[in-house]
Length: 201
Image (cartoon, rainbow, N blue to C red):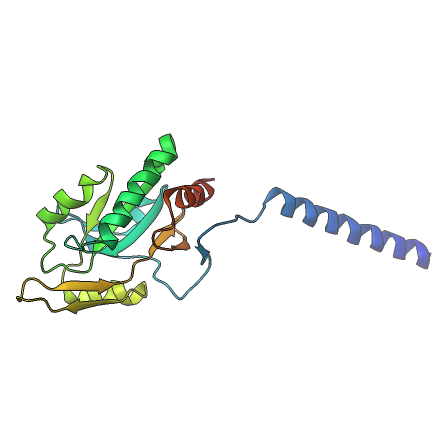
């Protein structure tokens, strides 16, 4: 009797193990080329910023899409246009899936990047791209702190000719609104397109 009960117990353990193995096999871990920060509590998980029409936008507005968030400014001479050009190439590589991706350009220079400038500059790279701006310096400080973004004004020859040092990486959220990736700068459109396809699965 004791042996029989032990056998039944072992069979149950084996069955549970097999079921667990099957579930793991059905839910393979996603593999990314960029830095996987899934589940991290160290970075921002939302934002509240103004679009060029003055409407407050949050992450919830883009639910159902993979969202790529990049911080920069329109007078940036190198990193920003390079990143936006790369993202435009990514959209081309994604084909029909590009409609499930939203690229957001958040300015760290709202003093010069007015709503009208963002409305012209950002969609010039791709009409689906959207420029966002903080309402004021306090809002800029908050979103920068939430996303661990570095920015600093560097004086120029005249008061209006300053430049902005800033973080060059981007962030990607999955269609459920979960922060998933830290995207390294200038890695190539193919690599990023591959990661976004993974997020869209």
